[in-house]
Length: 148
Image (cartoon, rainbow, N blue to C red; front, side, top):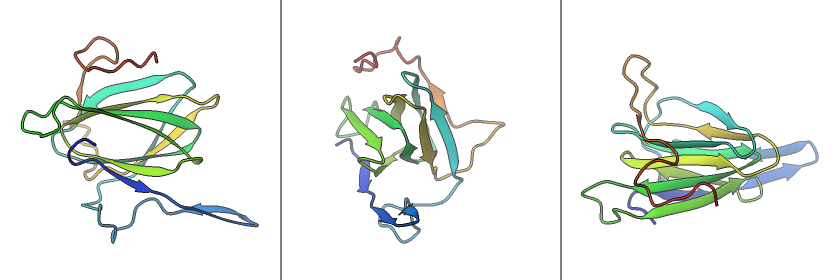
């Protein structure tokens, strides 16, 4: 596992009315701070990658469809520099993945329906000076192939 990455297995609680799933609580051991909560989606086969943050951590989960989440550690001082982690996240295997600042990440919708991702970063999005540093999904030095 990449240094600083945490995975919290989530539990779905069903009853006759539907389902409930807690995603992140302020009393979780993995919780650092609250910035905002947002939803993003990807249509089947679509890749949204790669980027990293210098100031914020991300807390990713998928609440509809299925996503393949990939992480790459390019941090020079990290003990896991050069490592890749891959997670397949859906309601069939619900998890919250904590992505530390400095770790490249992206996801691909691998379901037949649109994947819905909820992210709770530790800082709010700064429209004037976004904390996002991007490289192309396919043309880069990251040892990961989204076509697989």
